[in-house]
Image 1 (cartoon, rainbow, N blue to C red):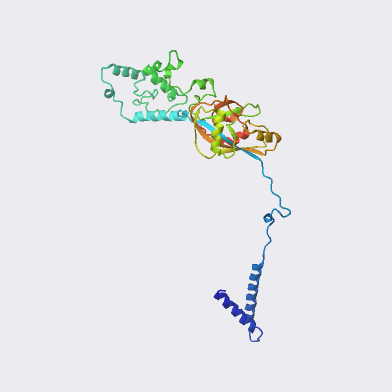
Image 2 (cartoon, rainbow, N blue to C red):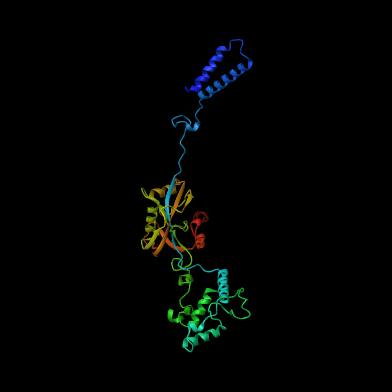
Length: 356
C-alpha cells in the first residue's frame, strides 16, 4: 500500500474511533460521512462486472449461428491498349492561336535578310523571288495572306472560316511550292499533294476496327466477343487458378485468348479496377466445367473480375486457336467501347480508359 493510502486509512480509523465521543464538532462529522461515502462508491464500482455482449458468445452456446458466406468466382481480366502514334488533332482554337502567334512574331522581328540566304543572280534567288511575289511579298510560307509591313499589318487575327491555319492546308501549300510531292508517293496516288504526309490511313477510310493502323492519335483497346449471342463485347478475362496471382492469371488469359503473336508489357502488378456481376446467368466460355454447372444451376452469387493494364508494342491478336470460345475481336477507342458494352459493364470500366 502506498504511504498516502496508509495515511488516509489511519486518519479515518482515528476519526471512527473518536466518533463516539461527544466533543467532535458537526463539521468534522459531516466530512467523515462524505469521505466514507466516496470510498464506498469507489469500491462498489471496482467489483461491478458487466455482462458480455451477445456477439461475444461462443458458437457452442444456443442462439449463435454462423453467417452464410457468398459464393463468388474470381477472374482476372486484361486491358490491352495501343498508345497514340501521332500527336493529337489540333483544336480550331489552337490552330488560330498558333497562326496569330506566327503573324505577331513576323511583325516584331527584323525583316527577312534575303541576301544572306540567297546569292543575287542565282537560280535559287530568282525562284525564291518568284514564289514570294506570288504570295504577295510575304517571306514566310505559313502565314496566309498577311503582310507584316503594310498599313493593314495590325489586322493579324484569324477570321471565322479562314483555313490559313489548318495544318493540312499548310502542308499542301509547302509541298505545292516545292513541287516534289510525287517523289514521296506511288504512281497515280491521289494524295500526291500531301506528299504522303497524311494523318488518316486506309484503315480509317474503310473503318477496319481490327487494324492497329487506325485512329493514330487515339488510344485503342482490345475487346473480344464470345460465340454466345447473349454475351456482349468485353475485355479478355478468365478464372484465376489455384496458387496463381492476378498478374500471372492475366498473362495466361491474354496468351490463351489472343495468341502469342503480340509483344505486350504489363504496366503494374496490381489491378486498375474491377467489375462485379451479380447472379450471372450465362457463362463466358472461360470457366471450368464445375463453375459452368454452378452458374447454370444458379449456385453462384457473383462474379468479380480484376483488370490488369497492359500495352502492345508489336504484333496482332489471333483468336483462331483460343481456349475461351471467342469468335471476334476489335481495337476500339473509348467512345467506341461505350457503344459496344453493356451499361453496367461501362460504369465499371469507364474510369480505367483515357480520353486521348
